[in-house]
Image 1 (cartoon, rainbow, N blue to C red):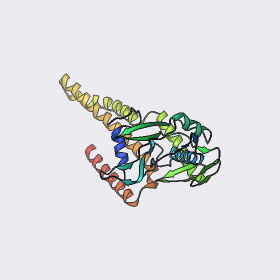
Image 2 (image 1 turned 120 degrees about the horizontal axis):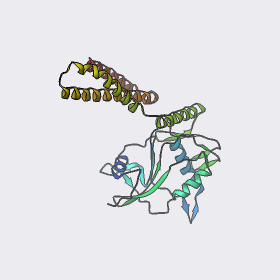
Image 3 (image 1 turned 30 degrees about the horizontal axis):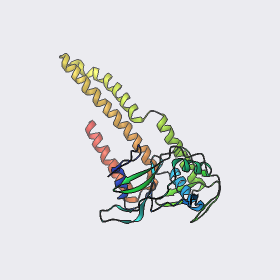
Image 4 (image 1 turned 90 degrees about the vertical axis):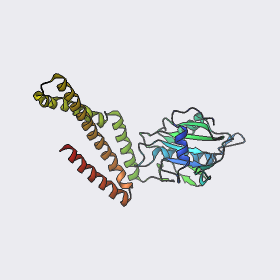
Length: 280
């Protein structure tokens, strides 16, 4: 089995995606992508392709932090006996990364930055994979998109939920943009886990000085100091990690089922009880 080098996708991850039962907010399968006919661009097929990229790039408030993928050459419904999707080798002309960038620049604003495409060989079949990293902007159309499934007017913000693509409402667009800006701030600012670890370590180091005064052996003093400082670092880091997790869960809550919410609340209560017990 041959495999093309890639910074975005490895073979194991591709295999897991080919085994998924359904398309996701962040993942789309296409049996084929015939964008060229007699050397010319098929405009409706190209606009459909642009629509799918913009919808994935915008995503929804549940997928702000996720990398999105389009896997071309994988059936979106049929599966083989081994549980992987039926593959249709891309042995025809596929667009280059330059082609895609040019099409997007004339169809949306702001630009979709960081998009990559590659042809990979998986179990003897060629698959064309589009990788769309998380973006910090809301991308809207700057011209009409005339697709086989309908027309999308200029200044439309497309979003994706599960396998469905549709124009975003004003409220959804504002929510997605705010969360994208929040994600940018999270990347720019120091992570809460490291802040918690540093603060916990400092406090632990200071407080442990009082603890070791009653110990006569110098070696024991150093050992106790190291142990208490490490424990404090881990404690501070865990607090930061919990704060980050709660912040992310706050935005995921609206997409959870009632069963998922009940399980999450049960998990939080159990975790708090265990945490308080350990501290005591």
